[in-house]
Length: 206
Image 1 (tube, rainbow, N blue to C red):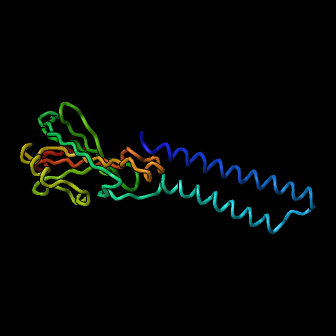
Image 2 (cartoon, rainbow, N blue to C red):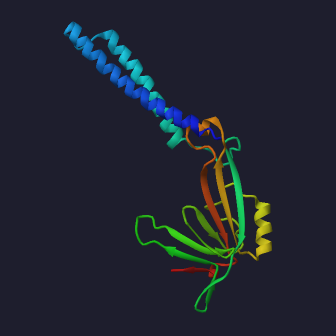
Image 3 (cartoon, one colour):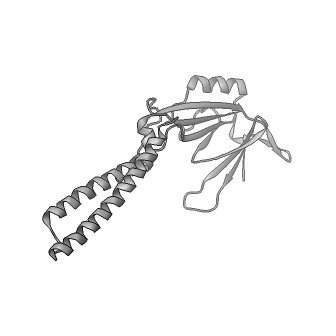
């Protein structure tokens, strides 16, 4: 069992508490008006403020943990990394043989390049946000250099595949209390695919 149940419980309680506070304020105000014919009482006002601060702080904390909290990829207390390596397979279009098909989008201010490659008899697709192509002497692209690659494993795969392989790094959130509160425990945090080809000529662009 993951700690995500704690996150779901906290979300339910946070929303329920906020609804109760709103209901409580409404009831108290109606009672105040009925008894004193006044709409303001300092003691009740500060009680409302305290309850609203607690409710909004609780809800804000849940929003932060679920949607905005940043976790370092190499923080092994909160994340774990799995790697998959696969040799690329040649694909042809007429007399043109290539390992990767690169397709550029024609829409948006920042066009995205999708990469299609074949490995283990299957077709895979990623894009320039979650993958990159390394050719020539450079084993790891500049975009991917900030990720914690196992350079020894990459060199081994490079030699065994004839400089044609795909390395997919998947980052998973660990099953911890803090990740559970954010509904992230045992879920994928990020996936990045490094596609290695012998030369730029092995990438067909369209």
